Length: 293
Figure 1 (tube, rainbow, N blue to C red):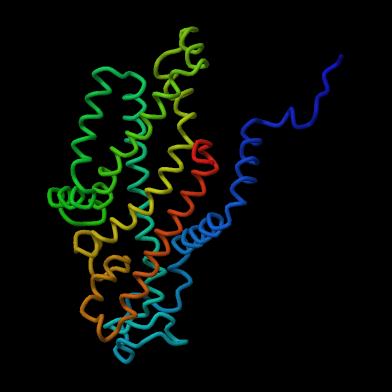
Figure 2 (cartoon, one colour):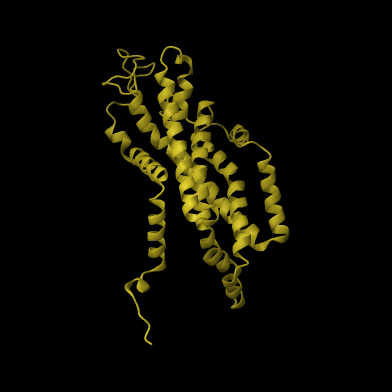
């Protein structure tokens, strides 16, 4: 009997997986809402400086420490600068530091995790023991120690946050690699003479990709919070910049007289981290079948 061939039989597997993912993810209402909120932040980071109602660095001493109003939606700071405009411009700094640091940590950690999980033995033990040393320090204290060596500045904040992300990614990717390398298709690939590098990056890595995406999304919120904390302590962005953490730091002396200076930067940090955590949970539920009931 002739086999019935449908149109979907010719559909590329990647396209089918994408449709399946979108169909499952769209049912996660809070995750979808968080995704759109994060997309809005990305848009603001890209075009924010060109659409702000006021110059975020220009002082206006006639409107110092004013509360929220129709003219200044989030009020003004101690120099009369529009807080709303500064928050929009600061989106690029805060997201840029968070995203770049997590990406650097993810790349380095993924490579170490793949090597550790695939080769095992002394390679695995060496990499994991080094990771254990980093795990012995709280993340923010480790970042402060690194910046104390490198010096303050946004570039060094990126390096510090990336370094404390490396062991986490390495541990997660190693665990997935240990599972994948025992699968039959890996054994078959190895039996036909494929090189180890080809097996690792061509066959093992794609199987770990969904896990990496979920972990990257959830770590991004932590990275943004850590970068803001370092700027708050004076170790990151300069106090005069529009970075969210720096804005919080400059507002400490005005909590009793101009609470809006603390409230709005704190609120945008809270909403950003919350949305990334919710989106990460949604991605985990869709991409990791083991997390489902």
